[in-house]
Structure formats: structure tokens, C-alpha cells
Amino acid sequence: MKRRPVTSVVSGDTRERILDAALQLAAITGLRKFSMEEIARQAKIGRATLYLYFKGRDALISALVQTELARYFAGIQAVIDRYDDADERLIHGFAEAYRLLRHHPALTTVLRVNPEILLPYLIAEDSLALNLARGFVDSAIRDEDMPDAVRAQFAEHVARAIHSLILIPGGVLGLDEPGGPEEYARRFLIPVLQDLTAKAFER
Image 1 (tube, rainbow, N blue to C red):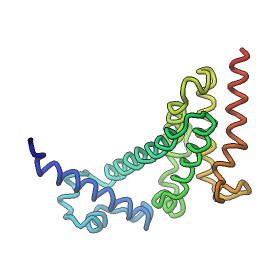
Image 2 (cartoon, rainbow, N blue to C red):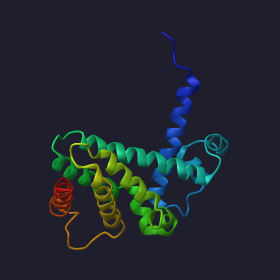
Image 3 (cartoon, rainbow, N blue to C red):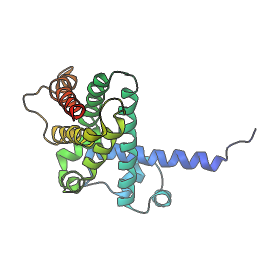
């Protein structure tokens, strides 16, 4: 049996440690004080080692965002996969999506401390965050759940709901109460799903 090269194991561990340190720092300070020197200190590595993995601050932030997005969508998918019923998938998938973002330590800090850094990704005519959310919702809808004719509309509806609820928290909807996101989905998403599906089948 071949042994895995030690260098690849160390390399993977070091990269993961850097990203973990970057996430912890972003959760504490936001992105304004997000320096390579501080991340190297947090990860307990030398600056030269850090630059072997990431050429600069922007490259590190990009890698961190990609890693967290992958983790986010995988977490939602894991919840969706537990349910066979379309309504239950929507209710619990939406609730998981909301909670993962609402309680993400780095995201909540950045939105509070220096939201302007995220504005190009969040609020733009071609919003990366909205596009990714729309695409994920569309991919998570099974063929038997909804006709193709209305999938894109419903995916955008759900993506925009998550988008606005995270960017503008609070209000009277009780989303942060126990069972709040599930209740929101039952009251405001399931009826839309049912209406769009019914009208599509009438055509």
C-alpha cells in the first residue's frame, strides 16, 4: 500500500490552517484590519509561508469566500436531502440557509463593521451573491417538484427573500425566534410554490 507523500498532507493542513485563521480574524475585526501579517500571526506561520499559498490579501479573501460558500451550500444540501416531500425540502432548506448566514461569525461582523466592502458582491445589477443563491435554489428543485417554466421565477423569489432578510435583519416576522424561518417558509414561500405550480400546469 502506497503512503501518501508527507508534503501533500502538510500542504493541505497549512492551507486549511491559514483559512481558519483568516475566518477567525474576519469574525473579530471584519475585513478592514485583515492584513497578511496578522493572518500569519494568527495561523502561527511565517509570512513567507503564507505568501507561498496566497499571493496577497485579495487572493486570500477570494479563497476564503469560495471555501465558505462551498461549506454553506453543502450544509443546505445535506438538510434538503433528508426530505422526500417538496414542501418539507423547501421549509427546512430555507431555514438552514437563513440560519447559516444569520449566525455566520465573519459575515455578521463584516456587515456590522465595514459592509461597504461587500456591497459590490451583494447589491449590484449583476449581484454575485444573488446569482449564486438563485442558481443553487434552481438546482435544488427536483424535476417533479415544479415545471421548468416557473423554476427560474421561484428560484429568484427565494434567493431575493434570503438576500433581503439577511441584509436588513429585524422587523416583525419573528425570523430569529425558535421555528421562525420554518414559519416564514410555510406562510410566504409554500403558497408561492403552490400557486406557480398550479398555474403552470393549467397552461
